[in-house]
Image 1 (cartoon, rainbow, N blue to C red):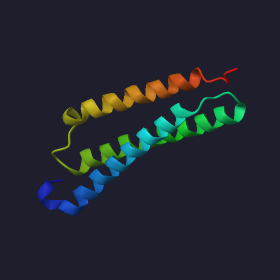
Image 2: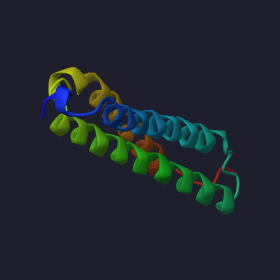
Image 3: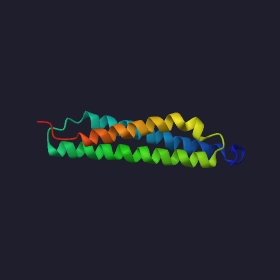
Length: 104
């Protein structure tokens, strides 16, 4: 679809969603990292926050795919760096979760 046929407001709304998702990803990762898991409850809280961060990563990638389908100027080539960063972050969160245990 041509950008001339997609109203500027629609492009803004799509872009704003990506900004909101990235804010949530950053916030949830930060909150999860701030928890010192010395009890099972704190570990569960950290896991819950990590799960939310992962969910927002998936939503971000999904919305980016939608933008690629709607806007001609958004292509796989010019979003590759963003996708690589997201994939790296997802890998780190999954690795953190594998190492999760109560610290005594």
